[in-house]
Length: 539
Image (cartoon, rainbow, N blue to C red; front, top):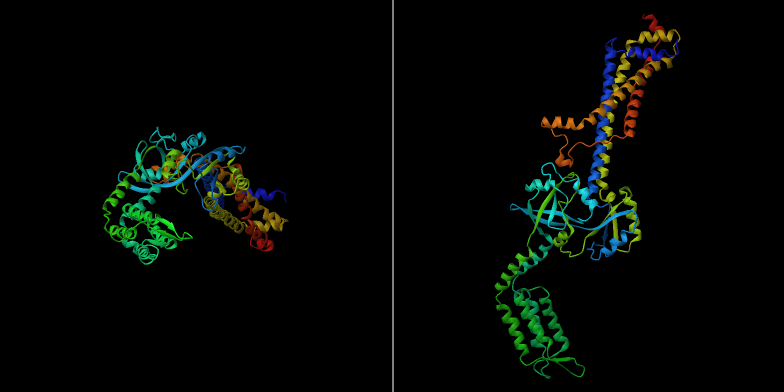
């Protein structure tokens, strides 16, 4: 018995021109090839998507962000230029700038909607160049990320589509920071008269002045402590931000209470001017109730027009990013963002760009340890950890599903081997009878499985690489058929990304070979246990 007869017989059984079972072997080979190709293509696209999203994220997202929260809540950073100079001394840092993240109301063509915006240093050439790569220039070549220091902005593609905004259009932004003042002013016009809302405090102050006169001393003399009690009751009314006319009246009363001559051996008395109590009663009980608040209310409403003045912003570019990522609706020059946020020269955070983005997490921890108390840092890895973990989970789940598909293809090899073992059972019995060992019989099936595996993996890798090379043409073909398999508006990319490192090809190939090598195990054991004597009797 020749030592390599297992290989010879395996090649004979795989000859596609011999019989039906060899045709099935060819089908098994194609199944393995398709499984490997699909697995390679899908994982390559997922890798490319992750890399492209990361690149686009880092185009506008700081590598490390510093915020100031000395009392546990973030506060605006006013004197931030000194901190910038200190941070630039780190060799790992390539650029430091102040940023603002806030919200506003956009109005365009009588439509209003809340939006978010980020104020950036438009003098940072590296960041502007990165943002410019995200700007859509297909429809308008003049679109750019260059905003300068004027009232210009980049807008997110989804927001631009929602409002029908094009490059060159002008939109109006209303600062939400003014709304607190607007609400307070509006509430003042709607509140009741001070004489009604603060009746208890006003009557309490009058009662003190009526009942606690020191008649033995003088008609308008009071213990200083009693006057302080009445004074505090009226200050409570004044601090409630009443209307201007009412505040003036309360202020006049407080001036009367604060006047007069201090008397007594221990200066425990205060003597007011003659007729002071009657004057106070007239002001509090009669004049305050008769004040015409219409003029004050009208003046308050008129003042609102100056509070809520919008900011006209010209759109110089529309940028695209995956809708799976939280991104600001607008990018604005820092001075414009400071004006909208009411921060004057302050900023919300300091944004750092590093020489090596992959060291952001360790550098962020180093900053936290070295900077003064109250400074907090985080990296892009921390901010977007959930998103990238989701991508990794999707890749893992997709790999598992496609591995099952590849395993299903290898199951065809198992079926082919079983059919071969049944058809060649007599031949196998004869081989065992003339001296072939069971291990040699098993070798026939293992070699057949390895051959199918090697050819299937090689064909699958070639097919997968071919699909990846022409993926743009394939995407265009489906698009012409009305099927957008990779919508740019949602994914934030014009074309299907892909990344196929050699290590991925090796892993996919190794998985295919492993499945094909283990598929003949059961058929080989079945064939090796054939009874030679029974096979000879059946000849």
